[in-house]
Image (cartoon, rainbow, N blue to C red; front, top):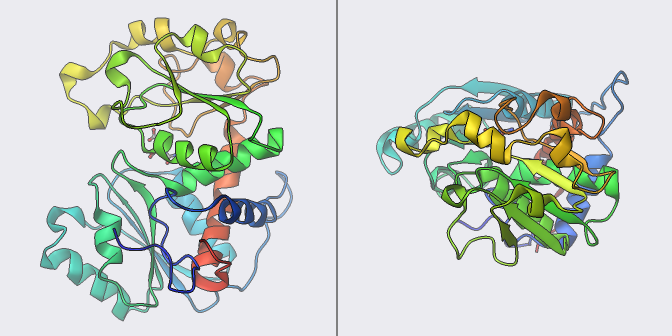
Length: 319
Ligand code: NCD
């Protein structure tokens, strides 16, 4: 894969969290925290990216991620263009390169990419000019680095340190890029008890998620955890035959107040959204006092501001 780091150790692209150091992540989260404001307060704005241009290239549906990248760039003073292009149709072919060179000719400095096909962000990164950065906004089932970072920021706001926490990631782990990025950041930040909870058919391959305990029972998976991260069933990444029946899934794996009672009394509940209420989570829990799901959305803008600043301006050393 194209190296994410510049020769001087600063971050140029953000394609995966795998391999980034704990120090770098902690600094990035500190910086992100400085951009967080309470609801109702004015968000911070700066001119740090004045004259720079960020292009959003999303070929899969997105609401929160696209809007928050756009707001993050604008709040730092950048110009933003949103494009709908089919990059992956010919990853190595001319159409992808034409798009990349066209954007470069338009003085785009950062390309934010979401695509269902594995390898697209790295393929673009391998072809851009040296001053251009590529940020993944979701790559197939593999990686969603800014979501991982905003999830870690949300946990830290409620629990300070991750190195004494029990965290359960619950649901369609097999097809989830969020689970994979969460895994990398939670492990790097020292989470000692990381559990994945899923029906056997939605468990990842045995060689993935090393160091996590695996639970097919929601009850044992949630026992005494501090954080519950619920995931959506990724219908778009499985065939019709593999789709679990919604009612049966909710009966066994849906998060209800009764089931949440098996976690620590002060446990927080997270979900990257979009949520399927009544399938993986009940509305009582999604809107209840332990839910920090809206904090995750707010934190998404802060993390993306810190990442854009990091690749386009600061470069604090990622090695
Ligand atoms: C997630 C995604 O696209 O991977 N959404 C998001 O970015 N918040 C999760 C999902 O689609 O289930």
